[in-house]
Length: 392
Image 1 (cartoon, helix red, strand yellow):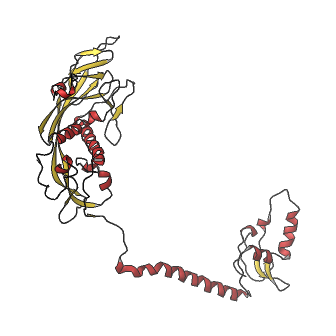
Image 2 (image 1 turned 60 degrees about the horizontal axis):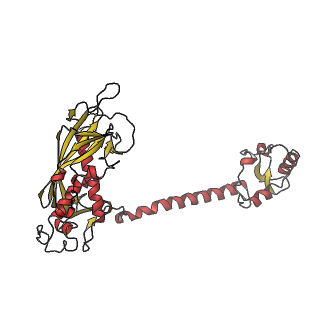
Image 3 (image 1 turned 180 degrees about the vertical axis):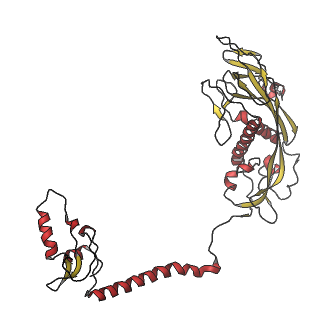
């Protein structure tokens, strides 16, 4: 259900529940990107150091001398897309805003990105440039109605709500649907959760040696970059704004899906869903009789044709093409004589498949396989190796 990745629901479970209309928490998202000139303050070995505004947030005594956030980040000098969080702000108890920097080093380009020239110069005198943008990600939790497929008629049932996210054990009581600002609950809880979703491209990445995550461009159909940890130095294509925005949305949806599956369960919720299934049309059940009638009619026709054929040829009884019946019918001079001759050539393959026989009455008055040559009626010749006993 990728079209519903902006909802805080367990999409893996609901994907198998058919059409439904439910009340749930939607992550209202606004993503805007602009040019940003990221200038490193220093270089440590192969790492570039950039300043952020993270250290100014929530400096509380309980964290001791160590600050909760670092005021600088380190980026590897690789030709890949580096991602880090520059700043964030809690706008309301259910809304968070974060600024994420996307930068590509070693002469890569980002659409609408600003360029920082000559970060370093190699032995050949070639300078290294950096292209970067800043994307502002605004996420707000709102109670909304989710319609999956064609939906279901009637009143919707709440499966999640802002109240339930704050307190899973009490959030689903019937009198609390409109109570989204319960003073007994922590307003910061949803701020922190929205912050984790807003910075999902950074949180879902892989840090190498304490540096910020990097991503490699992926031209496949899924449209999201790959985590980058290797050290090859291939150049990256131009990154577009729409590609980066799609990457942010997918990262937020993946984080929301992961958290929704591990969120504490509250009271059970009963909801109604509808799914299309294949079933028989009760008004046309008589059509089921047609296939077996055709099979039975064909069998009757073959039976009558076989009886009439035996009568016309004067065959006294019907024989099956079993091994014992074939052996019995083969005890004729026209079969035994070629068989005895072929037996003497034991080192060569059998040539009895060249023998043509018919099932008919012999001169001695019994029925068996014999050579059709010289008979007064027309017969169909058939190689012995392909012969099938049709009558007895």
